[in-house]
Amino acid sequence: MDFYSEKVMQHMRKPKNVGEIKDADGVGKVGNPACGDVMFLYIKVKNDRIADIKFKTMGCGAAIATSSMITELAKGKTLEEALKLSRADVAGSLGGLPPVKMHCSNLAASALHAAIQDYLSKKGVALVAAKRVKKRR
Ligand code: FES
Image: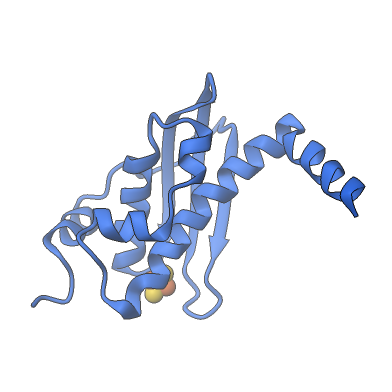
C-alpha cells in the first residue's frame, strides 16, 4: 500500500481554496510546535453559513491536503455543522492518513474551529458564553 491515498495525493498536488480573504469575518491560526507547521484559515459568513473559505498553510504535504479538504467539507455548512467537523472527518474524506500524519488533520480541524471562534468572538457570542460559564461557578 502507498503511504498516501490517491485522494491525499490529489489534494496535495492541486489543493482547493488556497489563498487569503482580505476582509474575512473570522481567521483561525494554528501551529504545531512539534513540526513547526502553521495554518491560517479564513472564513466569510452569510446567514450563519460559511459562504467562502480559504487557507494558507506552511507545512508538510499532508497539512496541505487536510487544509484543502477541510475547506471543501466546511464550505456551505452552517457554523454549527462546521464546528462538528473533526480530524476523523478530514482523514476519512481523504481516504485515511498514515498514523504518523494524523496530527496534520488535527491541525486543519483546529484551524476551522479557531476561525469560527474568532468570528463568534467578534460578534460577542464567546463573551456571552464565557459569562454564563463564570456564573455557574
Ligand atoms: Fe506538521 Fe504535518 S508534519 S502538520
